[in-house]
Amino acid sequence: MPVVWKAKRVPCTTASCASKNIACLTNPKSFRSNSRPFSRPNSQGVGFGSPRKANPGLQGCEGVESTSCCRALSEEQDVRRRGPLEKSNLFNAYFEPFTSTKEEKELVLASGEQYSLDQVIYRSQNGRLLDVQHDMEALAIYGPEYWKALFDERVGKTSWPYGSGVWSKKEWILPGIGNEDVVSMYEGNSNLFWAERYGQMLGMTDLWVKQCGNSHTGSFKDLGMTVLVSQVNKIRKQNKNVISAVGCASTGDTSAALSAYCAAADIPSIVFLPADKISLAQLVQPIANGALVLSIDTDFDGCMRLIREVTSETPIYLANSMNSLRIEGQKTAAIEIVQQFDWQVPDWLIIPGGNLGNVYAFYKGFKMCMDLGLTDRMPRMVVAQAANANPLYRMYKSNWEVFEPMQAETTFASAIQIGDPVSIHRAVKALKDTDGIVEEATEEELMDAAALADRTGMFNCPHTGVALAALMKLRENGTIAPSDRTVVVSTAHGLKFVNSKIAYHAKEIENFASKYSNPPVSVREDLGSVMDVIGKRLGTTGM
Ligand SMILES: Cc1ncc(COP(=O)(O)O)c(C=O)c1O
Image (cartoon, rainbow, N blue to C red):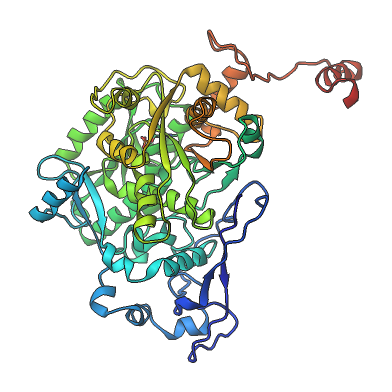
């Protein structure tokens, strides 16, 4: 059964606390988790309410409302109260080479290879991707109930920057950044939509869609970009010459997020886009935000090769998801999901995958919750790929033995038209560790799935369509059971992809039956004609 996630506030009973009526963050015991089952989520799912405008001037106690009790203790005093000073000062994160296995991890630990997050570095000495590693021992001092209460308390608050869904988890993301360096547009806190009617169509009772596309630039990329651009902002404040601009190769959504966050912080941005392979709505975003937009006659993989060369020879900072700072922000969507389920883990998570950074980000978020005791298990994870760009699916089908980059074919899910994913090893680790699955969807399957789900009140992008089509297949073959709690990650807003949706409904796509098309009906300005059309749709009983 769906459950609410709200923490219960009980009065603080600390003798020195002037505020007897509201929960006090300086006293972790004044918070209790309140898991109460309920039969139906309020409105259209489990949301976090509308994000309010950030108020950098508000100096609350770690992002909660300022009670006199909270004001009485400084942040540092508060931290000291909780544990030995040498531990509580240790909230720390750094880059470490990415490792897939325990043995690799031991080798890395023995080598001592690690880097400050203030360094401009994307790969390890022997060319591996990097991972942001947190001092888990220091975080563990505080215990799961403290973290749950803290995160719950920050939801919907204005105190800068904790009202952001990403920065509400600041200690788990970038503990070393000052609040004044954060570049945020109050991203995250997205709705977890209870897909009741769509679930019924598939014979499911507990189906949810995490609406990551309902965000500032219309995709989940905002979650990672706020972290990356904040760190760049911090480094540039120390020395502007280290980073002259930030650049990325993009299938549309990364460039939109990068240019918006850079514009907010007055940092130059440069985006490399494959010509004619992104939607018009995606193209206009970096143009409007003042980025230098390079439209290059190649595909995403070609753009990626070029940006890597450019950023290795200039002080232009690379913002693609091989940069693990972005993964840190994106992982908050997983933490949010368990928070929205009152700190319970779903059985399945289905996510569309292209460059494969996001699946690893979700894995990291779920894993951190489990490692710090907030949850007790991992969900099974499913990556859904377009059949026209499915290198991970092919590898999965070879029992994880053979990975071959491919030439990705055109797909309506244009943001995942990637044949040589940078984060392939990260994705394989996430899937192997969670008994995961890879599924694929043809063009017609993904457009049909998006259109069918739209009929139940959603407005899906084609990438979400890929995930929904994968869900249908896994339901049909019995892998996902009717009562399994399943979350589909919606990665972008459907409004960014109206051209393909219009073509579908107009039945203009070659070789498509467009089973769920719903074209507008042209009708003369005449009551009889209008009534005829309505009668045809509603039948005689509806008139
Ligand atoms: C809308 C959308 N969905 C899915 C993805 C895939 O994410 P990842 O490349 O991290 O696998 C992207 C990435 O560009 C995207 O923009």
